[in-house]
Image 1 (tube, one colour):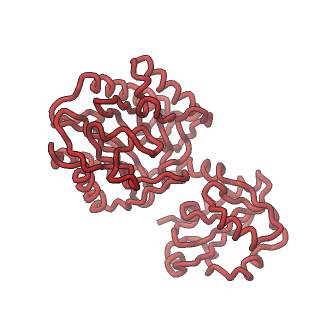
Image 2 (cartoon, one colour):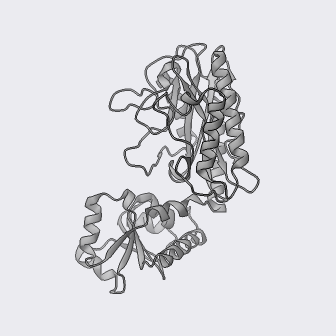
Image 3 (cartoon, one colour):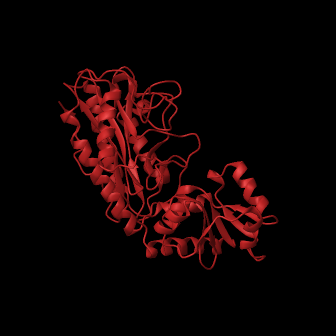
Length: 388
């Protein structure tokens, strides 16, 4: 549960941003933004003034919000007529997260607060969440440990002839039994997934999701994740799952095989490990995200695998790492065009992968904390391919 000290620290940091941008305050309606500052995911709107105390306005459940949040000023959400009276005439410029606000909701708030200027604070919100406090890092490390423990159990039930969906269901069952919350929250529009991927052989390589590997899924309406295809011997079995504990996400991938693998896949895996290790060593404050991605792409190309890097040829993802925390797609992103420098406390999932048509997918993913000594791995089990 969010402590009062942690909540105050987060709000104070954001108030510094508001003052620097010349804003009088910010309204938050996106549930995870509200949760980040208030400690409750109840249906609420949060007002953070540039100076002074935050105010949480709760639609439902007011009782639970009061029990969960350390904020001092928590009120029932007022009627539309009363809402405007909560803000004095000095409040003229209001921060608002345009990236996650539907037009209908934006219109609702601008009508209730006429004459005010609404200013986009999307990037500021993402930047402040990208640097994890010691409180958050403890939760991230716990999430990584829990997830890694469950990956260790996969060899006990992975069998040739079982369907991808059966493998996924068994892993997901164990995830839930361990206390995994299951909500894979994402900020990006039009992106969704169900806990993770358990896919094998040729079913690993195509789909709408913005990642290297998507799976076939079960239908055209759910074209992501495990399918009804079976696990076969001598084909890579790709397990890519998230752990979500106390709201905080970690992400990891491991490869399993019943029998042996094609030599080209083995070589590609070795390259993926080399890329991961090089990036892990470089995960230090000041490193530029784009440069790290370009370095990884150069390594893939030098190994003769550039066309397969991070996706099917022609459908390659243009990143190799993504921030994780309360959302799966946080800042920073190790991607082309993303010139942000790393900061101590960033948490990044590094995932160099190769998709080789006709042979399958191979690669690795681990979650790391950016430190002065390089990336601290929090998904702490062996990276090796597991042969059964």
